[in-house]
Image (cartoon, rainbow, N blue to C red; front, top):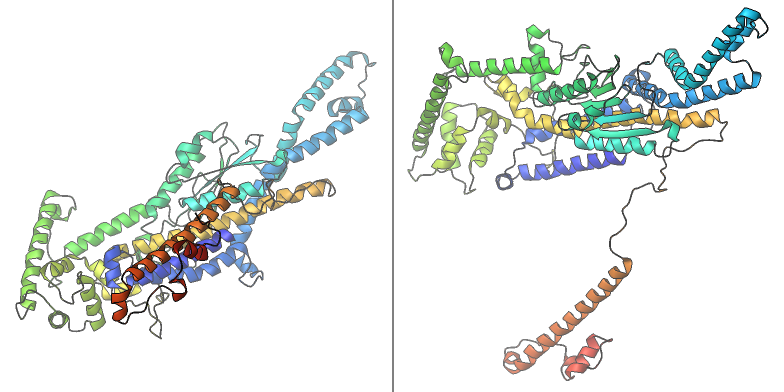
Length: 619
């Protein structure tokens, strides 16, 4: 709870700082801010929808009541996964109990299972030729006594339907997530849950970043029966597709390490409904947010059937290919449209290739021509030839080209281009503004984070899908390119919202696992054994670090600083008195009062110090 609450508080602080900076063009230029008002509105919408998402994950609403059974799908899946992993941990304890019962029963009765079966068929030492068979059965009983723990574990696994190829040793849980804080916090949570558990039901916990070092640090430790849980970012967003592909690659690498046909048991938790073929299970979280523009465009693609949120889903590799093709087509369409007239223009096959020499040369020539054209436009807009354009000249010229433009958009564009903040645009500022891509310009317009009273506040987006307004004001050939302006918003959603949901999902699963293990021992011992998973051996609810400085040193230092302060006050007082006394007559004539109190004026210096420092000595 404290981790999620702290994360939410930091999100609110982040929004407040950002909206303060973004609302002031000067602050935005000084800090080099890249975030826009639209990004903050998307984040705030996702932040508010996040409450509902967390309620469905934990199964309890914000008022403490259980949610409806129809909304418990995610919670049930997480708790079911926790139950299975708890059986992995408890199998040694259960096999130990079964072995104890078998040994006590067979030794006390004198009838081991193999020998007992032989005697039931009439084999005795006095039966003549069948004596040697009794020795064979006794040898089988000795082998059973030796292998009884492993036999019992195999019986338990067969009854419960779990993998029989796993190693029969203590379990290791590896936690992975591209957000480092998620993996580290989940590792701390799980390790503290099992801090007081009995050694026969102990657990080793590790963590790593699947997009960075998890493969190099932990995959060489993968054995049959290792438990891997990994959070997956939402690869349906173009800014996160590569990150999800890297995560899936790490999970597949770990799951492909096999021995005797067995490997680790991996579970992935994420929003993209695409199960990895080598993973044991995929738990999919519901997306309580509107679609981003890239998802909407991908859904509209007829070649993909228009079902991005279907149960099958698209793998990270498929998403990478689909988005790459859509980006290539969007750039080609933008290149084949004249930016001035909007008419189609013909391009050769070589020019259509993005990295062809002729295409690169043509782009360089176009950039040069655009700069020259911007200089020419600036001179036409500068009516009084003073080398600067004020807002009236800028608005009048812009409305001649686009009569329906919103004046508020022009104000925002003008303020964004006015770097020095003098209220006018010089040639360099105008040229830099003309070089801004339409994507960046459109992304910064038509958004204001103020409420009805005009107070600065992050207002949530009201769009049916994020980017709906961008599509309405953008040229027809730019929809997918416009989705690139949402990359920062997608990354904020991943780091501030989606990561919290994955962390909470992991804690629900781990809590169920720890609770099942905790309840097992009092049940089998009639309450004699047991521990509390909310406690640790340190007997502290919050981990603290001892101060490296002695308390006595701190007290002595405080006394010294206090004495220094009093001495400094005395010195300042005497200094002011001396200055006033040495120049008292001429200053008194000017009517200025003495800053030194009259009660100290006739006192000697040592008496003056004694009055300020009562503990000081005469010397």
